[in-house]
Image (tube, rainbow, N blue to C red):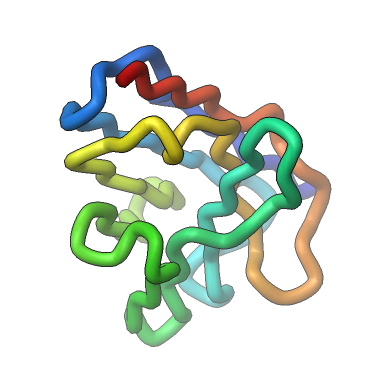
Length: 114
């Protein structure tokens, strides 16, 4: 059974930073393109950062230059370093496989106050 456990969210002021973690079990993340999604209130889920099995990283225009995705293959963990946070970054952050996602975890709530 594949599971993702996200952590590291919280309340932060605009301009601040947070680091999210996603521990995966039941899969080996290095074999998959992994992605961080954001679910903002009243909006559709959108991907914000991806890392391919080859290590290439891709970012949504809205977070480019501010967010960094990385992974630790030894611990099967995907990270999202977020800097220069804005109020529009508020939402629940979830990780999953990019193509044909597995069951969703609970996500990490990020709230950015302006």
